[in-house]
Image (cartoon, rainbow, N blue to C red; front, side, top):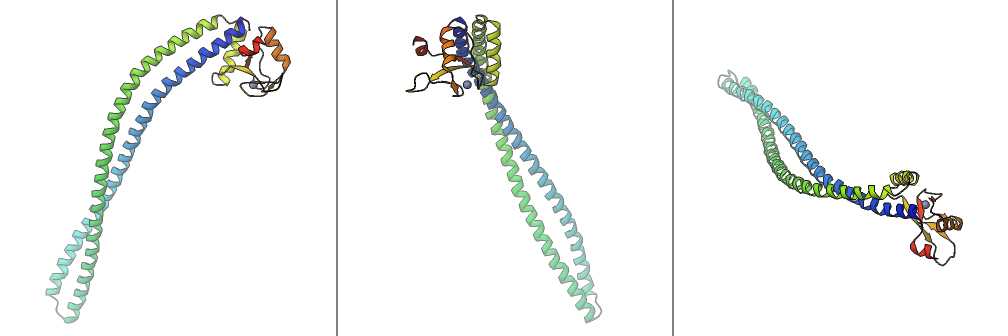
Length: 246
Ligand SMILES: [Zn+2]
């Protein structure tokens, strides 16, 4: 292999390290975002619970008001019972009194149920608040760790990028353009080694997509320092050291 293909092979190895360093930085940034989202989701759970609690409170207040007014009815009926002038009237008032009392007992039970619900919801709110506090502390810790790591990783990226630029300088404009374009398509993988199929002489395939490569292309790669691309995936083909020696 001549200087162009050698340069592209070297650039590929630096490209791999550059991509790996960038992925590492993205991962540590993502860890912060994931925890921020957890805090946000707990906060919206708390808001929803508080809203639910508020609705129960309104309902409970309404029932208590109703109970109060019905208690007054009971008092009135009791007074009417004492002043009733006939057995018939007495019996009628008594029936009404008993009905009202039974209704009030039902109301009281409903109010008690609502209070229990509010107690549970209050405890749940308290629990979520505690979780938010804990999650916020974890987030702070993660943020600090990520900041330190990011500085290191940014330094590493700058270093590898400088190395990349140096190697790129040694490659002519056209092959470099091809490298960049193919690298964009295949997540950084622009150069593929030619693979020789086991046991079969002169049967070659692209190490990127595993489609067949003609012996003619391999001959060109052996004799000339030229960019030959896989006809299927368009990756830049290079030979392994063993293939060059043959
Ligand atoms: Zn291919």
